[in-house]
Image: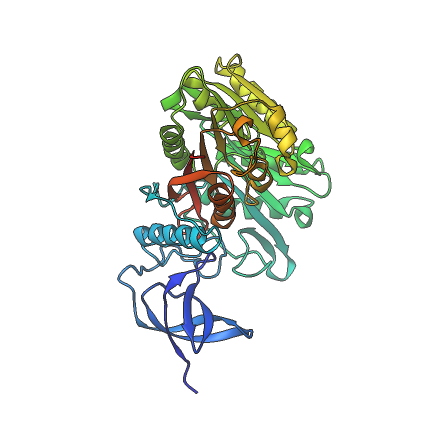
Length: 444
């Protein structure tokens, strides 16, 4: 029996082509918008099927030969076969579709997409490690596509070249260690003055491991750290006193120190452009009081403070709050900022009211979004809304278009805001991951 044919309409949030055939939605891996393909389903449900493309009958003019030889096996990238402008356009459409179907709203205008280098951009990563006795060696890399197995790879084009070149040497390093079967992960952190590799160790290293690790670190000019349990067990192994990790924002004359497992944006090039866009939209002014919710180590807080505004940062991680205080002092902004640890997923109207009035907000939540925070704003039909502390402007930076759309719908339909503009940030080229930014203005 011949394989069925589908016309691909769009991409879903996993980078699969979306088509409709005989009343069912078909998600087709390897297919691009505008293409006609034959497909073979491997999962069938009453309303949808999941399939693989078999033959490309009519190819998109944006289809490329993937640059990485591991594409299709490694699960790190989903859309290397789509030209970069097509990737950005697909992500913009995902954002718009989510806003309308989930939030029942639209941005009044779409912002130009933010994008930058397509390769070598990923300065933070978690590499899986697995000793495979049958193969007589160690695998280091990302998971295989749709699998918990580690891909057999010798390079990665989205990692900086220096890190990509370490994949094979890391395989050899782990293979020489006494606990090679008890190292499940290596976390990579690249700063401007240092590169750190954190070995997740489930058993202590033995004395014979030390000279092997030292020789590796010296040869490849990296620092080796270890992590035996939780984040508080992360510590330098060799050298014990190497230069610290940091990144800078020259436009705002800022430097941020960070520990290798602390959250920072993986793409430093895009982070700088994103900060510029956020400051343009927020337009902080001297004398204003501005809140930075989910502030992390102060990535947005300190640029806002450079404007002369007074900034209050709130974050759920005590370690990141401590790091934010450190960065503020390092950059001479400690008098203009204040940070507080709090679980923003448990925000209430009373707790929000107790923080006092803010002229503007910046929100940069994790994938779950900022629902409780947004819900804590007064409703437009609340008799007390006129005296409540609602900001005039909100800039929302999102890593999940679905939760942004949900929160945007509440801001627009219940809280008296207009969604003036929104657009995508291609923080993760060649993946289906969508970052975005939006601005809301109070109207009622």
